[in-house]
Length: 631
Image 1 (cartoon, rainbow, N blue to C red):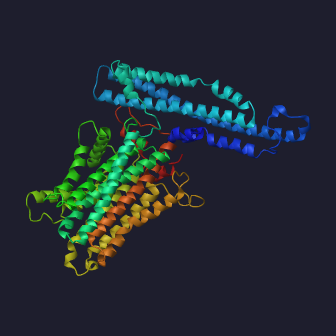
Image 2: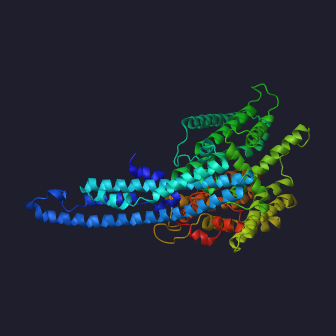
Image 3: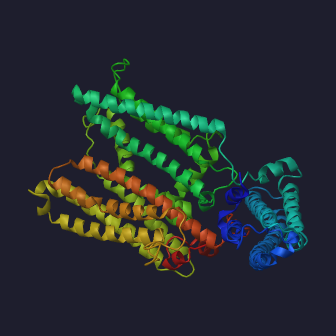
């Protein structure tokens, strides 16, 4: 692999603008060679003959001017790199002193929560030192390579001389960084592992910053994906086969029991694609979600989970549809297996099957369910936003549990899947959690920004739309036409307000778009990670899916589709909208981290100061901060 590609793949994306611009300097050398005044005249200035004096003078002047410009740019690049390195080194010195004082004064012989917290702070600080070491080593190699390339193509020795006097000889601060790395290892070994260096290094170990998935993991993910695809095709063929032979008694409950399970599987596959794209475009989702870099799940692990759930769901579907061929009299336990087995794996306390990721998910879910009582982090409100798009899946899961309760108690209403009073409450819960999170963030913030209450209004309108929709459905039987019902107008007005408000919030605040109103990035922003067409696609798709409820009303009023089928299509569209939303929302967050040069987690050594953490994390709702989310 050429060094240019290696350089791009190994740099810390949050510090991208502080690295030397290797590709630009390389392009300068290439253009200088291509645009030379006379290619027939040698560029080796040491072997110019007298008869070529005129032509050689022109070449000499050309390359002298280029040399002056080139090394002026090199000096600027080196100055920026060294200034950033010195700044980070000074920050590291302050953090090291704070960690040393905390370990000596507060820990002592004590253990438990204090030791775990300080251990986490040490490991994250150690990671930041390794990243800073990587920053220096990568830039050092880049300057050496570019100077070597200069000498090769310009046929000079000036590059080696410049590198030796400007980069090699002043290299003094590297020893300070190595000394700090050794000191952190010593402190961790002495105070947190009782002198066990092997245990300390196992905790401090930093994985390769750009590691690939193990081949065995890729193979397993591919096998599960293949099994799912084949099983899904067989399910589709079997379903249409049963329709042809009019076995309605088997198909009637099939869609009701499996709609929510299918949506969960689709969501898992979408998330695997999200993670894969984030990794490939350089969006540091591990940092954004506050996950330990040493134990995070790669995209192949997400594909394993999605493929496994998908295969389980498709397999139980086949067993349900063909239970007679398998000699099974009662097919209804099969969907229950598909629901309970993933749940059992999620709460399994044994340290297998991505244990750290499962614990992280359960903790985030716990903070979402108790939103007003805990400080809100990015992962918490991100998860609550996903739940908003999966509200109908939650209702279907409730209907599934209600069905089995009635079925195994021999109730006459077992196969009645009509919504009850719990359904609208469940639909309102995700929006209620987000509303509580917004108010909690407002309460924790020191300057009380108006953006948090404004964000809460968005979820309040969603709750109001659900309430009006429920009233309309319950009272429609009293009127000849849907539009004779006076509540329908309240529903339409509130839904329209919620749609306009939510769409505006998505595009302006969550995505950070509509910052440029002319030129190449029209309606977008200056810094883009994806291709331009993708942003316009997301804008159009977000608006259309947000307005799908209007088409839904039209289809139901004209009896083109049943309400159940409309809700199914709406749910699939909403999950797809959230899938696209994740790309731009994480990108916007990543740009903020790049603008703040934040490449590691913030681990507080003193008791958590909510105002301080809030100011460091407030990046999702304020229009002022959105405008500053730039490299």
